[in-house]
Amino acid sequence: MSYETIEYTVADGVATITLNRPDSMNAMNAVMRRELLQAITEASEGARALVLTGKGRGFCAGQDLGDVTSFEELDLERTLREEYDPILTAIRECPIPTIAAINGAAAGAGANIALGADIVIAARSASFLEAFARIGLIPDAGGTYLLPRLVGRARAMGLSLLADPLPAEKAAEWGLIWEVVADDALMDNVNAMARKLAAGPTKAYRLMKEALNASPENDFETQTALEAKLQGQAGNSRDFKEGVMAFLEKRKPSYEGR
Image 1 (cartoon, rainbow, N blue to C red):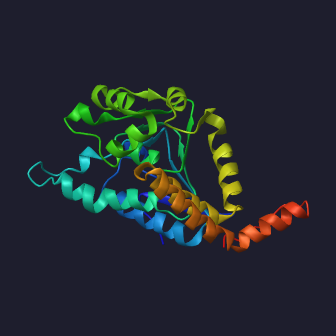
Image 2 (cartoon, one colour; image 1 turned 90 degrees about the vertical axis):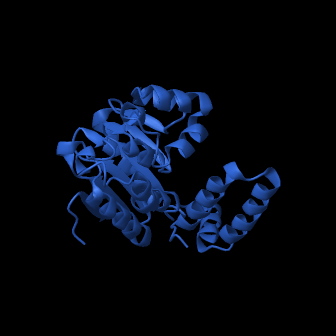
Image 3 (cartoon, rainbow, N blue to C red; image 1 turned 90 degrees about the horizontal axis):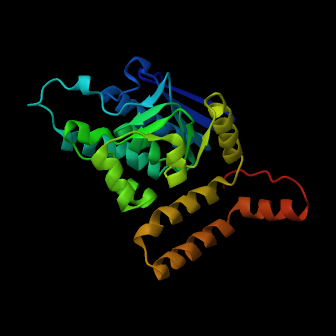
């Protein structure tokens, strides 16, 4: 389908979603939220890896404040529950690996949507900003869930209360993101990683994500029981058999994602 506020392409099993409102730093309006959810769903059903990035000098400035027609009609709870939460769930439960390529500033909901991806790679000039306190709000779009789990309570509090930009290199030092690369090498690095994942054992990736997503809420016994269950499923896959045979035959495996 055609999109108004994003670009969507698929090549070599990799779906790429590019937020495409560069004049507003890719700020999210209602149309973009609908289209982003649709594109993630489309990628989940037809690709083997997903890349999310932004066009222009920024990744995403978060909510488009110019999209607010009146404070009297503004219902942030409804907007989060009905428009943002489905996007966050779609990213978290996406059955294929997801990579966020942060090409510039990621602020507010834009930062937290990015941090929901499986792997986050940022250009050296990029930054992350929990901007909510600047306008009298709390971190949303999963921010209060993700930040403490990624960097701990102290740093999550500092990022939220102070609302100062966090440079990409410090974000990597803190463990908020996977890595930082030179600006002009960002998409080459991301695309190479995405192609590698798209050629990998997709079913195992899905089961891996399920296990790791469940881990923070489980005790040890519950988690190891889940591991055993999911490993049983992985062991019955065609990809597992192919991986073992390729190892024994000293050749590159040909995974089909099943």
